[in-house]
Length: 637
Image (cartoon, rainbow, N blue to C red; front, side):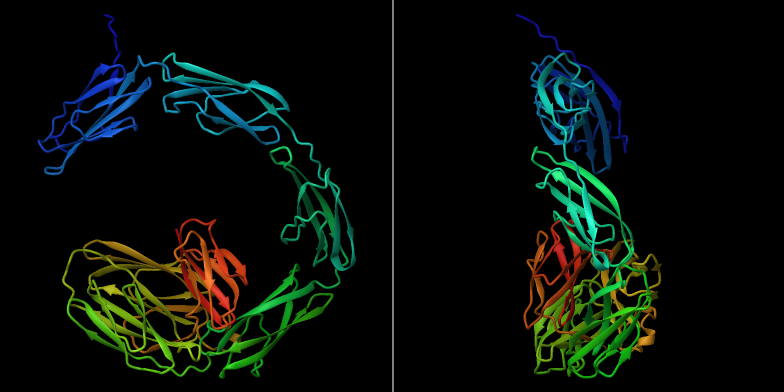
């Protein structure tokens, strides 16, 4: 009978930690056959201690004395952790095991593909592809690699046929396998070239002289405009100057992309007027309050020359500002004219005209809240101002709860924590296409203490009584001891009811972090579009905007346009959100921002939003329509 001798190399190299002298992890390893081992737990532990084994990341066990069979030779790490909770007791130990004597099972293999000129990508198909396999690549041009990464790229010095060899070795044993293949490497013969002819007033015709007319072409005109993929494009330059024009051509006929590029200078000196034209401006009825409209011109020009503006708002008002504001006291259609004059030589002008529909200047509803406190944090909220044209009551509670109910229905809610909160009611008038809101305070004191759970939330609302002012209504639990307001512009406040001034209109991620007396901390963030909040004198259009955190004040009303039938679906989605609209709502532009206010998507006159290329998370879509703006929260998963 032949005896099989197994070499067992066991080395203890670390003890991670030992929190109590009652625990001391240890074990012995006993060979029970070729590749098979019994692991004997010799730890000093409490009677109720648990065991957790890790066999080099390939298998795990919580048995006291497990067994395990390895399928290939190599050096493996064996870890044991013993632990108990009463008393607290944790100890761990790791040893190495050199497994030998198993048959050689390594089979070396690979395949390759060319991804660009002279560049080959190799895919390692060796089996088994485990961590104890060592590799040696020989690429046939003198280059080698021991990388286990797959795929692996290699650049050859010249086209031709190369003999490539992959040797796979199992651990420290003599178990090896070799695979050899001949790889053909190709080069590219693409040559890019072009010429051009300059026409009148900056118009240029480009002619593609590249090596083949079937190539894919990408043109960059050097003036900041979008690239062109036309074979022989025609491009309009809007200002005199010298531009760097580039042409890149691609050939995919060889199974991989071959590319060549050329860049030539182009001098334009016959543009007669730097002001080529103008796009239409945006009217946003719900940005500034009752009947207010903010106008934003978007002049298409490649010059940094100065401009002057003459606005006529159709209501008797005028302005010479670039982005003015005007107030309307009656609903209706108003013709708008803006004359833009290029004040640099040579002088020229263009006229923008449009018609806006003001529908929120008159809205005859005024909401009022009645709140009844019940037991254990329960409250009942009702709207005491009933109007026949109101279809919905929208409730927002200061602990983060939202609800949309029909007229006459009471809203019942239960708070989970004692504290000072606000309740917001928005009445939606579907006849006059408008809405009004009111915010009321509420104090909760009768919720039984059930532990140490923190909740952070606040309501953001524009102030119609003071120009350039926004209000924040926080919900503070009764045991809040510290707060931190982050304003989204790099500044913060650590008092409970601060004020903050923004220098510019825009999106800001406002965050509130609260700390309770028991030590628990939590945060809530909301991306808010802070804009001018009242009808104001045009000369003050660039005044700073102030946000104030209020402490239980009542009676604040807001003016918003009715866009209740504008929504996205499905939401959440995998990144594609369809836009549903009715009541003659026409989508003009879509801007999507992330939680820190960065614009990540822009679209015009679309029926869907596609952010499938972005990371999963929460985004905010501002949808500009012919009846105002609406911000919708998007959840991509």
